[in-house]
Image 1 (spheres, one colour):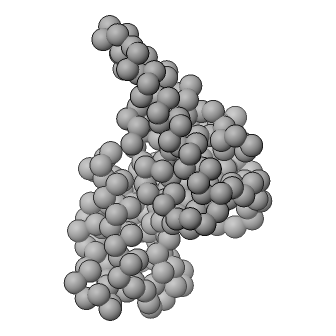
Image 2 (image 1 turned 135 degrees about the vertical axis):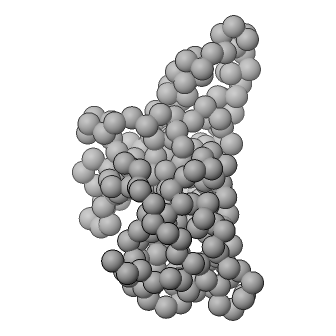
Length: 225
């Protein structure tokens, strides 16, 4: 399939936000992949923050419609963002790579049901509270107790809790916070469709499959940000 060699972004702010998103993603995994999907005037950039057991997507508006579905290196994608022309920023589409397993199981595009709508401040507060709890409890461990297994168990306990008043596990909130998706003042929404749960913010979404749906675990982060 032939893909457009370059995507024309709607404005310079789109380029800067995409670069920030990819930069945060690459902090966990320098070899991360990104799947790009476009069918019109928006390109969706999917990534999987390492060890969060979450998929993330950052939509970017395009100045020119495009059709695209390709998996690329996230690092190469970041390097290909051209912000020099402030009025006409572009992204060169890197060469296709062999996609990781998560890239073949993306959240559905439509048919979502709203489970809850929440103030952004409340969700940011929940993220900060559990990050603070993790740090506090980790600091109470002796060097002998602070093993990888113990930290993984602590992370599993904390990030698997639901966001109060919703079925969404806090690992999806933690990932959204770490990727900079909770900076906007507008409310956020918790959505569901079948086996999927999703946190939708003005700056992107994080999505998880319910564990009772038979989805394989991907591990959890033990490094709060």
